[in-house]
Length: 477
Image 1 (cartoon, one colour):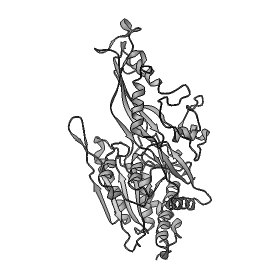
Image 2 (tube, rainbow, N blue to C red):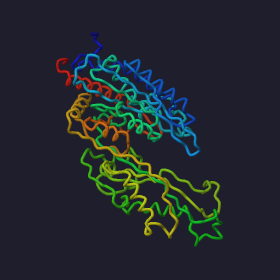
Image 3 (cartoon, one colour):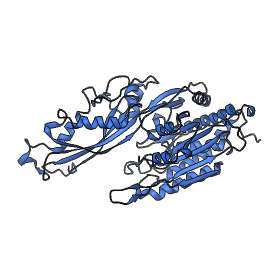
Image 4 (cartoon, rainbow, N blue to C red):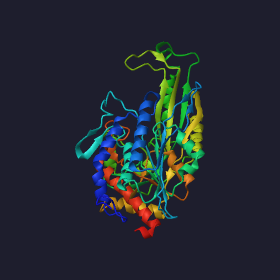
């Protein structure tokens, strides 16, 4: 055994991981250069990224890595939209005992689009101050991809447990194709421990397990006021309601005066984990000094265990503001998205939203309001933190961050796949963690990742696999 190879009790892992960081950084930069946006015009780059990630896993020691076609989506015009390939790899330890656990490692290699007029260097990675790497996807979630690759390298491709590695290529697109594939092929996704590397620490350098995720439900609502198109706002304005103004009035009813979601019957729970610090949260979110935060209850509850509602899309015949036209708009549509408490039934929540928008006392001026189509929904997630593997994960994280205690924190986002994997593996420890601490500014301009955090989280995952292997095979310790 060479001096750079970790021993059976995890000794040598810190030095091993640190020595790998130069190559890991180079590979992460190469991943960032690839414009892996899950959209038809970028599919060539998406496929290139999938192949690059698969090659990294193969070189790191996985026995079998495949690019899996998980199907396409039927479009209204009858065509089938192409989907990103799923990178699926497995490793089975040859000398493993009967109690050796299977660990499923998940991350996604696709990224959200960015406004390249404001950030033209989004896909040109740049190392900056505080050892941060800037670039679209550097944190979300190519850091997760590289965390798994680096962990394999830390063990010279021979980790002490069985592995299944799943890298998704359309998480940000929200197609739900992988979820359908999991339902059709549950045997490919069985595990004793599931590590979802699409989360992050509550603060930089503070080891954290994300123990809850909100669910979501989304619907379209359309307001129509005229039967035959727009009309002149001077000749008819006043008594004739403008559809866009009516829609604004309807949307305003979704909150009460304090900013709480006004849709009745939705679950609202108390968050008992780590509470965000309001001053830090305001700075991270970029809230203007004079703007107060909305809602009631603790900040943690408002972020993690209470519903929220936003408009995420808007369609109307309004002309651009720099080319105004004096007309009354006849129809306007909004896409309403609700984030939900982790235990909320998203289908029931969508129906409650539909009923609320159709109430006579909510619709302004007796207007024709159509809440159209089947709701898009996703379940939330609440971790079972009582099992032995979860306790081992807490210890591994704390060991990777000396002097720190592992915290439990919520996450306001939604990852429906997590609850599905939990459903298919009811006895497994589901761990949501990663490098996406608040300074990363994921989905925003100038996203970045701390390379120090990537090193520590790789070490934490390596410690965890080492500890799981020794627990199942005590004689190898």
